[in-house]
Length: 85
Image (tube, rainbow, N blue to C red; front, side, top):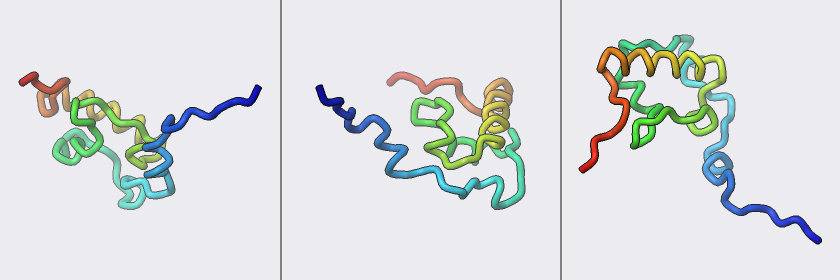
């Protein structure tokens, strides 16, 4: 029997790719909860934290980014979820 590949499994990762273009490494900055407008770029439309593969952030800054987003949520600067309409 031949093994079949699942199509579309990592479609988004394949299309965008990860690369070496971490936003924070380029500018030599670290994520901060005070920049909560910029942190919205790393959230999905349902306000979930996006993976490093989709955002292009290195793992060092991805871990810090997750902590900062959680801090901003506790300070009510970012929502936990979106409201149902």
